[in-house]
Each structure stands twice: as C-alpha cells, then as structure tokens.
Length: 246
Image 1 (tube, rainbow, N blue to C red):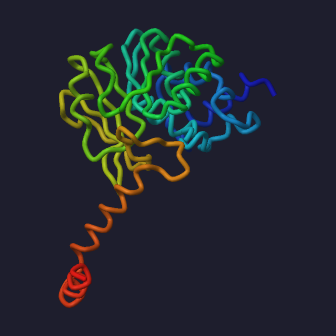
Image 2 (cartoon, rainbow, N blue to C red):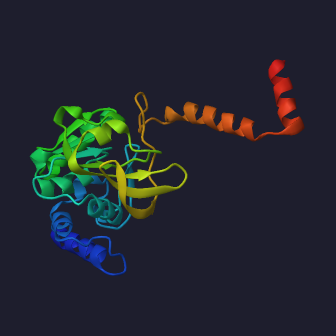
Image 3 (cartoon, one colour):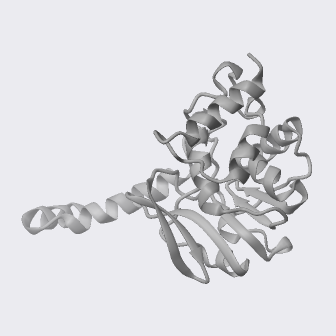
C-alpha cells in the first residue's frame, strides 16, 4: 500500500476520539508528511501504533510521539532542541513544523548520533543538526531555544536546559523515577501535566544506550545496596555490620 495512505490512516487513528493524542493541525500535517520507514527496521510495521527497539534505544510509537509533540506546541520558525535524539523520528516531525535549519538534537551515544543523521537525511531532513553531547548539558552553542524536548526521564529538569530556554520558552520532559509524569515547564514552573509515562532514565557522561550491559548498572547496584542497608533494622542490621567487620 502507498506509504502516504498508511500515514494518513495512522494519523486519522491518532485523531480519533478513541486515542485523541493528536489535536492540532500543525502536528497532524507534519506526521502525515514524515515517513517512518527510515526510522524502523521493519517497513511492514512502520505505521503500527507500537514502539520498537533499535540500537539499544526505543523508537517511540506514533501515539507517544504525538503526545510529546502536542505538549511541546512547536510553531513555525521556533528554535528547538531535542535531547535524546535516538533514531531521529521526533526531530524529523519537529523539523517539518519548525523548519529543519531550526532543529538541533543531541544524544550521548555516538552510534545513535550517526544513525539519526543517516535516518534524517534519508527521510528528507538533512539540515537537522545532530551532535554527540551529554543531554543534561544541552547544546549551549545554539541557545536560546524556544522549545526543548527531553525524551528521557530525570528527577528534576537539568538546570543547564532551563538556562538555555528563551524568554517565554517551553520545556517538555518526563519527570520522576519510579513514577513519571510528562510535564511542560515555562519560566522555571510546571505549567501543564500530561499524565503518567514510562521513559528510560537520562544517561550521564560515560554511559551508552547500546552496550550489552549498560554502564549505569554499577551505579544503580550501589544505590540499591545503600537503600537496602538503610531498610534493615535490629539484629539483621547488626548481623550485616558484624559481617562487614570480618
């Protein structure tokens, strides 16, 4: 079937009251224009409303992408930063709205940076700048940004990202650890909440998304061990302390 027809069907389903994740004309038109085939491995399911794993990262489902884009409220001509570029699909849709020269994206994993650049070029958006950076530090070289989208979760919005927002700018990201909430932030304050979500945590410098065992594991193990020790009481804590002395 013609991919354009499949895209129309996909967006129609996202606009239908059963899902109602796409509401604005800008997002609707952009998602009907951007092909998904370059961003997924199996063309036959490119327009299914499901997520995919690719190179250690998650390719968002169309409904998840639509939800982010509606929260971000990108307008033509906006300067936009995407943190956690992944394979580049969300950046492509944003580029369709704002103009590819206005869209910048970063990812901490070098392999994904190369993948996103290739995918964006194949999809028709070679002008989107994709760089290998620690997402928590943003991309100050091209700041300020009218919109910043973070496709990874953190307990709080990283301060460098807030500082790189233009006056009246808007940052959208999942906030929280175990339970995450998709929020929009303007002028340092949460101005809208869009329900619970589940995203991978933001990686820090030295961690890679595509390793067999993520570098984060050792840090997480230490944190879990510390919390477990704090929960132990009475003879159990004393027994463990005694063992530590041996």
